[in-house]
Length: 429
Ligand SMILES: Cc1cc2nc3c(=O)[nH]c(=O)nc-3n(C[C@H](O)[C@H](O)[C@H](O)COP(=O)(O)OP(=O)(O)OC[C@H]3O[C@@H](n4cnc5c(N)ncnc54)[C@H](O)[C@@H]3O)c2cc1C
Image 1: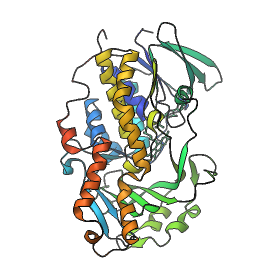
Image 2 (image 1 turned 60 degrees about the vertical axis):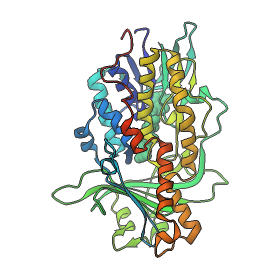
Image 3 (image 1 turned 135 degrees about the vertical axis):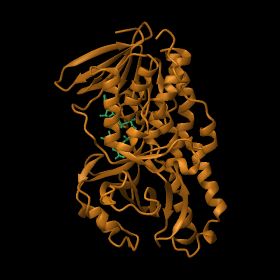
Image 4 (image 1 turned 90 degrees about the vertical axis):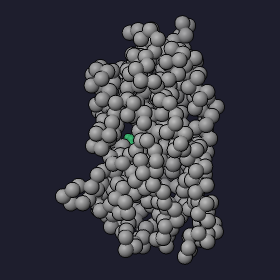
């Protein structure tokens, strides 16, 4: 092993984007992933244009993304009366130089895994290996403590450790032992995906209902040219009293449609039949909408947090996976400037921890779905003409404010130089 070795805890979207980035800039790494076998788990996620730009720069282009998802064309909010509150074009149609992709999380994850194995070699992503903690070394490096699926323990020394081990991060727990428990604001989500005819533009994200009782759905595949059907990702969500905390079993469990459909039994319009979509779904998962309180820093000497381990946030802004990818690239850029050193981690932390912590709190306050709050407050969700409830300009201003905070304001992104210049390598790599 070399002096430059970076150890990555977690082979999810963030860990694998980091491994691919390090390989691109000439830094050796090893990824310890707790699961014994990589499987295509999860349903839909969105890759915002700022993340798609980074994927393209990593050599993960439209051909690959079109196999695991489809470019998003529109984002729309609809009231309980079935009438539109707000809509805007997305991706290339909105003027971005890069598309937004709605993808199947599991298939996208497998795509990154296959690329990592092909480029870095089969021994780099080590499955069945859970990082349980770390120790700083006298020489300034770090030792990762690893527990293997067969029960054996091992240690690995490296220059840096990146904790990309998700919302239940062991690395974060050691870095911030006094962090509060996972935060649940009272919303419960049921999720699934089923084949159905896509509506509106054919690739529209639709948020329907109120801020406490809603459905979100969008296609995560191109429509099959023979049947016209696309895989539609859906999330049904209800907010309840959270004063007793989350009492159900586990954070993520498979349930039956009958366990929740009563909340949406009458959600039928001539253009959309929610119960029918739910009933056609093979596997439904229940999970509470959770996040973590921000921490003041993502760095402890030669160790840094990345992705959900750093900033688990509500999915309301569709930016958890996108931000994990951007984190990996900002980290790579910091290494190009400062080498494979704790200073690089400090620069990465200084750039992202503050603003992204603000974003966590903003998403907690409903994120872009805040418009539904306003409609609810002003007219109880019933309106004839939305302009009488929230003037067009106010709607546009609200969304512009959110997008600037989330890092996907159009002009700023289009004008920004590459995060990692083409061909850039870490000095001495
Ligand atoms: C199984 C699964 C399904 C998901 N499904 C969805 C979904 O349907 N919709 C959605 O919006 N988001 C989903 N997410 C979350 C989404 O993937 C993340 O919010 C986002 O991609 C950020 O990625 P991440 O790499 O930081 O975290 P994650 O994607 O959570 O990846 C973390 C990885 O670290 C591994 N790990 C955990 N602890 C350790 C440890 N101590 N040592 C080594 N490895 C460890 C985990 O097995 C996992 O592979 C899912 C996450 C997982 C793990």
